[in-house]
Length: 76
Image (cartoon, rainbow, N blue to C red; front, top):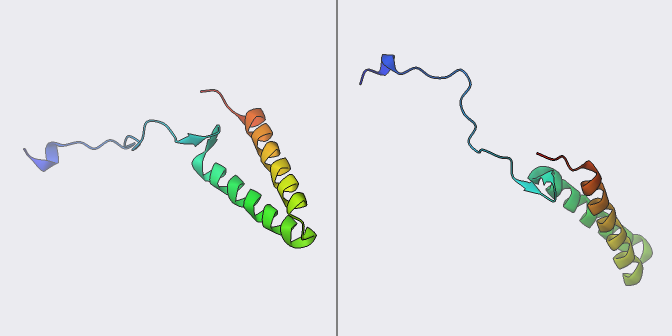
């Protein structure tokens, strides 16, 4: 087959048919949210020196992340 006869599309097909989503968000956004939650948990622990306050703060942040992901979820 002659290489010159093969036409290439200007817009190649994407590698994946769908974007990978975690909790309704793209994986990068979900990873960033998890990293921020862990960072805030460490910050709370360092400021309060209390396990109870750290667990309560982390749980509150996690619940907030779930609520926001439900609010911002797009249906496809």
